[in-house]
Each structure stands twice: as structure tokens, then as C-alpha cells.
Amino acid sequence: IKQINSPRSNTQRHGKTRKMLQANNTLRCVSVRILPLDVKQRAESLLRECDGGSIGSYTESSGIAKIKHCVSQFITRRDGGVPSSPDNIFIKSGSQTIMLKLLISGKDLCQTGVLIPVPTYASFTLALEEQGAAIIPYHLCEEQGWTLQVEELRKALHTGRKTCNPVALYICNPGNPTGHIQSRKSIEEVIRFAAEERLFILADEVYQSCVYGDDTEFYSYKKVLSEMGSTICSTVELASFNSVSKGFMGECGLRGGYMELVNLDPAVKEYASRLFSTRSCPPVVGQIALDLMAGPPKPGDPSFPTFSEEVQAIKNTICKNTGRIQEVFAELPGISCQPLKAGFFVFPCLHFSLKKRQMEPDMLYCLRLLEETGLHVRPGCEYGQRKDSHHIRFNIMEDALQRLKTFHTPFMKEFS
Ligand SMILES: Cc1ncc(COP(=O)(O)O)c(C=O)c1O
Image (cartoon, rainbow, N blue to C red; front, side, top):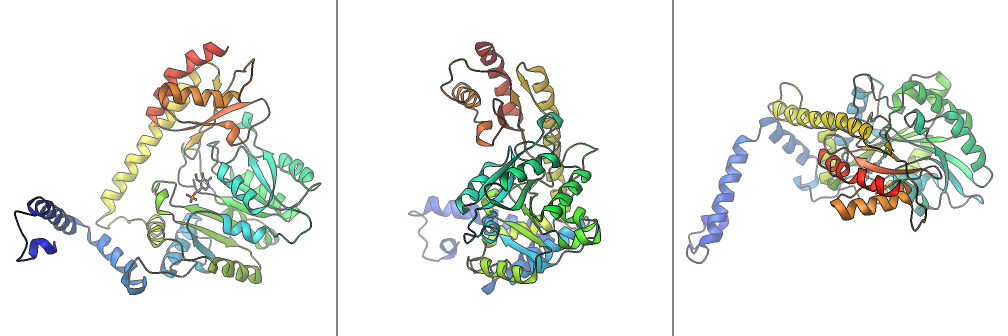
């Protein structure tokens, strides 16, 4: 732009550059002109919160105060009025490891244990291992739509106590890779169990806005906890997570998420804040994305029609794909799949075995699928599965479904 305006610009030498710049300049002018007023105002008000009006500045290590406030309002709206305080919100770059640092003390003689579901989101298990925690697996019940059963939790805890000191219970709701969602009753049972056993609940709720089906509803652990008896609701400690990586934003590269702490002893919360401040602030662009997720355009805002159109288009595609997935898996031989209720993935079970085993059957399936169709799905062994059961984690995309359909039947014939 400087070049265009400069009297010394050399049209011959910079002809091409100049044309490009002119085109860019035109684009810029057009986009500035059509930027809805509320978008401009939102950008300006967020920039005012940044030192020097720049997103290149450091912020508070737990996040920009205005954005924490926006997040706490979002939580209150989501939970039908249950209060949320910005003081309990910690904005993060997306990972939960700082919380693990708080819970997993290296000083105990006995290793700190965390109960985690099988199957589960693999990176969480790796993060726990990296922090030196002992993993206590509890199995979700596949036959009943990957439900979480308290009896299974009890059994797992009992076994875990023989080798480590269990302090926390990790829940992934809605589930990755299982596509399940917990009912309110199931959440109440889990909270009661955590209260009895004095376990800290880590509720990973990053898929909370991806819920399908008319009879399916997302209940946050925070909301259910707040509506339980007075002792339980004021004593069970909870950290709940959400992120811009999932939902309709899907902005995983921007790295924005938050954790809300509930019922923490003030001294522990103080310690958690200090732990946070040992790290620099989360990326400012990620924080801004979080602000947009927590406070999207409202009816009457000039940008609302564009926003709602886009969200509706995404919802329509997802609904179409979820329906197709159930149909296709029901038709294919040697594969069964629990209903997809929420999240982005399903975890179908493959029914075949290998006579001569050079590798896990699900790994072989995934490798052959990749070689023959270019489609990359992940084997169940990476997420955990019951002995002698084999799964794949599959994401709900039409194109992927078509490729899997062509590959699957000949593969199954070869191994049946
Ligand atoms: C259940 C679950 N929790 C957390 C994450 C990580 O999210 P983030 O990008 O915010 O670190 C993922 C990513 O796939 C996930 O599936």
C-alpha cells in the first residue's frame, strides 16, 4: 500500500507487485466496508483489553479478565443460571496438563493414581504418564452404548488402591472415541461415588456442543453437582474443561480453552493460580477465539444472520452424516457400531480374527485401509479396548464412509 501511494513507485519494475497490491488494497477496502458493525466493535473492545492495543502483548497468565468474564457468563447461561465466577476460570492453551501437575504430587511414597475410561482419548493417557501418574483403567460398557457403570468404577478403584494412591477420576463426556453421552442420572451416580471415595473429578466436556438426536441433552457436571444435596454440592471438587478446538468452532490450531474449578479449598486454588503463573499467558488469538465461542453473535446483531447460517449448515451436514453412519454400519458384514449420540467419532467393533498374528487385527485393518484407499483411521488398540476385541475410531465424514464401504467387504471376505 505504501508502494502504491509512493510518488517514486516504479510501475515498470514493480508492475506485477503493484497490481497485486492494488488488488489486495481493493479487497481490504471491500472487506472493511462489509465488516458488520458489531464485529468491528467487538474487535476494538477486545484490542482495548490488550496492552498497547496489540494481540502481540502478554496477558494475565490465567487469561484476559474480560474474556474470563465472558466465559463465566456463558457457563451460567449453559447451566440454566447456576452462578460461575471469573475467579474460578483459567484460560489455557488447550491442554489439561497444568491441572495434572497440581494433583500429581511426586512426594507421596505411593504413586498418585487417576481413574480413566477404556477406551479413551489417547493424548490424555500420555499426559498422565508424562506426569508420572499411575493409570487406573475402568471399562465403559459397549453393549449398553458405552455407558459408564459405577460398579465398574468401584472395582477399578479397589484394584487401583492395591498399587497406588487414587486421587482423581477422569470423565470424558461426551465421549471420544465412543460418541456416547451420559444421562443426568449417570452423572449423579458418578458424583455420589466421587463424594464417597473422596475423588477429584476431572470432567472433559470439550464436545458439549456436539449433541445429536431430539432426546439427547448435555448436562454439565457443574450443573448436576450444583443441584445435588447440600453436602455433596459444596464438597465434591471438580475441574471442568472446554475448548475452541471442538464444537462448531473447530479452531484447534488457535489453542484456546478454559478450565473451571469448583469447590476447591481457597489455599489450593491460590496454589493453582501460582502454578499457572509459572507459565506465560495462553496465546492471545486463542483467547479471542474463546471469547467468540463463549459469546457468539446474538439475534439483532448485524453479524447474526451470517453466523447462524454457518452454524446451521454445519449442523445439517453433521446430522446427515450421523444418520448415514448408522445405516452403512448396519449394512456392512463383520462390524457393529453403538449409536452415535454426541462428539465427532464412533468406535465400531470389528468381528474377525487373525490365524497368524503379526500385528493387532485392528492395526492390520487400518494399515490395509490406508494402503488401499488413502483413508487414515486409527486402530482401537491406541485408545484401549477389552482383550480380544478390535475397534477402529472413525470420524463422521461422508467421504470417509464411502471409502471405508468400498474397502470393508472384500477385506472381511479375505479374513473370514
Ligand atoms: C476428549 C478430548 N479432550 C481434549 C482434547 C484436546 O483439546 P485441545 O485441542 O483443547 O487440547 C481432545 C482433542 O481431540 C479431545 O478429544
